[in-house]
Image (tube, rainbow, N blue to C red; front, side, top):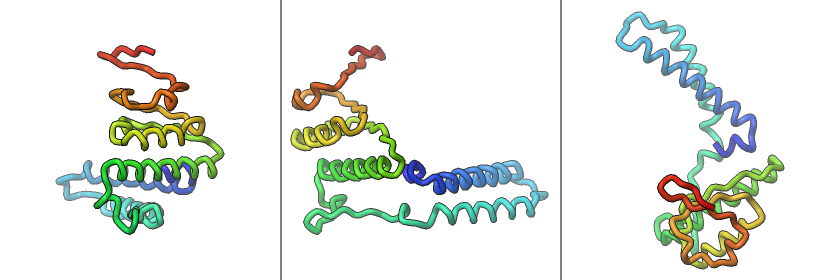
Amino acid sequence: MEIGQISPVYLHDLLSFQKVLKQRNHLLKMNQGKSNMNDMLFDIYTEQYIQAAVQIILGPHRDDLQFLVNDYDVQTYGSQGQQRTTALSLKLAEIELIKQETKETPILLLDDVLSELDDYRQSHLLNTIQGEVQTFVTTTSVDGIHHDTIKHAKMFHVKHGTIEQ
């Protein structure tokens, strides 16, 4: 769906595909077990489905990405921190692309990623995004996060469904 944020054409094609797929599946469900299914209507939906699918199935967004560090596949040989850092680097690059293409800055949500990073990577990530992109970070503990890194952050504590600042 991220591609849709920078390519209105792709988003249109994706939404068209989803609409045709939903209509086709509804037709199949309505006629399940019935022998008088309207073959012509089904054929039309199938053809529309194929045409819409071709628009979004082919392209660079379907490629598998492989990240190498010193010729080693990060997914196979990297530590959990290295894998998370690689994924975060890709997300930050995606944010930069969206900013360049749309002239808008997206909001970044980091859900409990700090617990998977060592102190150095935590500080580096938070310093990289500080002042660049509005970010919501969830964590179970702020212990281990250097005070200078989060001194300008608004912090909220959620306990038993109650939010405290």
